[in-house]
Image (tube, rainbow, N blue to C red; front, side, top):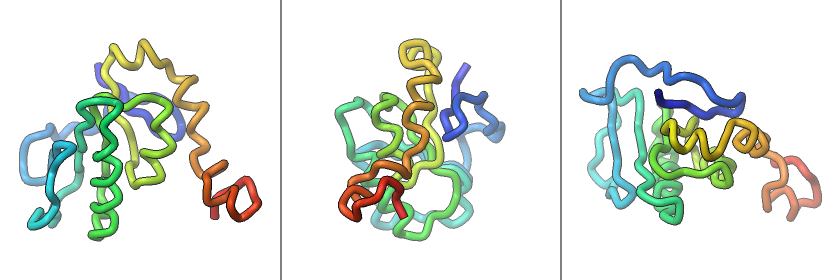
Amino acid sequence: MTFIVTDTGFAADDWTAGFEGSNVLELASDANLNGVALDGVELVRVNFPSFADGRGFTLARQLRLKGYQGRLRAFGHVIADQYAMARRSGFDEVELSDELAARQPEDQWLARANWKDHSYQARLRGSTAAR
């Protein structure tokens, strides 16, 4: 079973359309977005081959800046400590394998679910909440 992490915790994957077809785009962490067509794409999955590989965060930000408003999902080796960065960069959710969910249970992800608070931007402004 695959778990989906959102700001409310773990949930079963509700994407039932499969990952093949023109409505799903899967990107490697080293993908180049030049010339990538997003018309009709409902789900973009960005692979994180290692928790130390942060290029997926840049891809998420670039997709949002290009105007992509659909569902954006990180999958692969994303850890709970990276959840706030994933959300800030534009991801809607993180896809976890059973193995990773067992190693990092829901409470570890929920501890980072309030991702808008305690950002460095908020600290620079002298408040605790991001605006």
